[in-house]
Image (tube, rainbow, N blue to C red; front, side, top):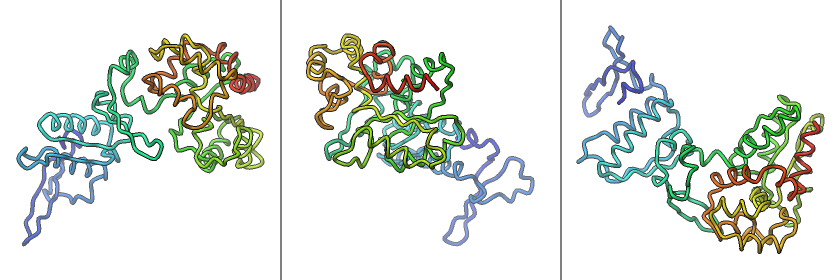
Length: 333
């Protein structure tokens, strides 16, 4: 296993010095046969060797439960592929393996039902195992790791960017992947502003941390702009989607119901209550995404981009004035 990841690795060399064991390793081209210490390995290679040793020890010595936090750190993509095979082999051989990961690449080597997603909601953690049936046709077109790199990002890349290209506006998008705050956004924008003609944003209002009780869309957009260096502020186009990105789904009740595989009656009830779908809200508990989750199996990164593609920009713009004004401004650049 080690040679698959580090082809220059020949073998281990054990030297016993009293009660201590000195572990060195041999290079395939080391004619001196003196070996090297572990300090000469890269951090990623050393980590892989440690994990391979843990997983590949004899079954009677191997722990029944193995817990690892972010095993992907420092590993080459080839090492990730080998590690995933080792993990699956050990899991199939009687050991329970629990891994916390933020790696899309590592996640792509596993099946949906291998995952338990943890969400923190209303002061408690909720654990839910993914079900391949809930992912529908999406899982046939994408790998499971992509579930954590899509959503608004996919919508921008596959719907908004091609549309703006027709107006001569070229788009390069970046995904901040949650944990949004004024300070984090300002640092990101101040770092990007020198490399582009303009920089815009697409954030959920409810996605922001630290909102004041009297916060509004306008006050939040003003705060973002005022955090930008004064000489560059004219290049910033802050946009906050009220109250959530999911509001756009309500642009077409029939296509929304079909995409969510749900009855459209509850969608109609929401639309009757809110004539302007960008105002769908009473609280964070009754925001658009919560209403959807209460009535359908909803996986944002799967359902939202596909449904919005089906609805199409003309219908979304007709129903969502704020979104339409933002897109019209970008078209005029």
